[in-house]
Length: 136
Image (cartoon, rainbow, N blue to C red; front, side, top):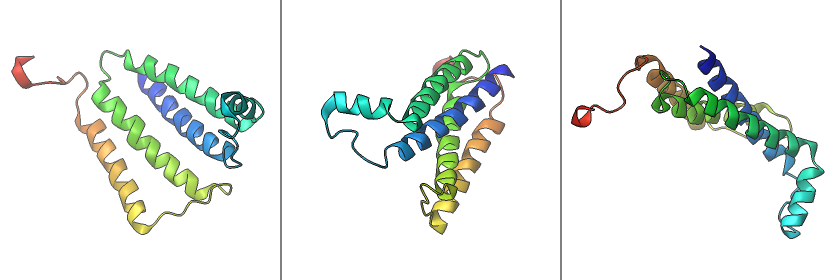
């Protein structure tokens, strides 16, 4: 259970990191003055620092979750990618600073991605073999 909690926390932190970096870079200027200018821009932006910190915490928690003997990467990765896409898309729609528009087709796509992640996660028994080819 602790690995599932770590995976869920990593998922949320990944979404927060991506959204923070989008918000933090809206003013531009990140690549205007080379690497040193980019570093100064990042260090002077609390939102970007929060985003990078969330990414670091995300990586740690994701690695922690992956060490589980029962949580397969073929389940963990779709949860991270598909779940992250859904969270980020919906949050970007509702965040006043981003106000991204989602078409009806995109809403359907988000729902389908979530349905696919749920199917993969729920219908794959814990400890199921990851490769049935060659008798492994």
